[in-house]
Length: 384
Ligand code: FES
Image (cartoon, rainbow, N blue to C red; front, side, top):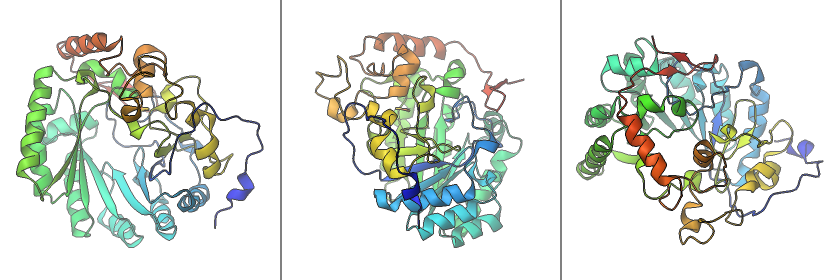
């Protein structure tokens, strides 16, 4: 049982404007920022949590047991690389004991058949493996990890042999979009149930690498065509989730279904975030499961309440007919591109910054920059 009552609030913290939120249905657990790969578009913050700050096994188990009371049904074990945690099997078992479905989001490169079987025995429901390309040379270069692609293929095979459903996560950008048809075929061949075709979103590490990653408009048009054709051809065989690139969009994405509305993320050190990139917004303080019960944080965290609902919105969002649909887009992108997280996401054509980001995309896509800055604890290393 959880000892959440020991963590009830003692503070005079006041929730911000707008408390419109429901039950969180799924949660991303970034159990560590350690990772053998160095992808230049990593969704972790540029300031990575150090291993010594990570929640202990006991802390994670306690938090997992608090989740069913909030209505949570599903947890995603992510990182960094979740297999870097020696206690990952114990954590999956704790999720199962708490009645939660669990998904392992992994690079696959350190997965062994034995550990995968132990995870399956502990009740793991699903595995998601990232692939950087179909061509091994390109894939290993993007991930900054020698022979990683071959290890991933092996991990995918073991996943299917263990009877676990598999999703392929394909992060797409200018340097690998030409491989998309092959990556879709690869997913079918390995018996994946789903592929996530996710164009890079530009915060944190990806923002640092934007000139090397930004696709051209022609590539995006071709990508749309390939996805549309594959969706039709592979109905009932492979489900395709498609994330379009923001900079070429007309409408902004409903990021995370709205800030603090139905999803949260727990960082390795225990901070509860509305999304993986939220710590890139300077000046916000996120509450930790080390200081408060999860239920209190979900309802009362000032940072989660800050952009909930629609009351906080300035114009043009406030009088927009779509405000209950897209909630003004992505707060992290608004901050990264305009310096104010409360601004309309520039991906929206109603934003006064929209034309400028479209031009940025076109200009950067034409630069011909190919060198990556690899993600690491030192703040990034330029490709040799
Ligand atoms: Fe943070 Fe969109 S990634 S709100």
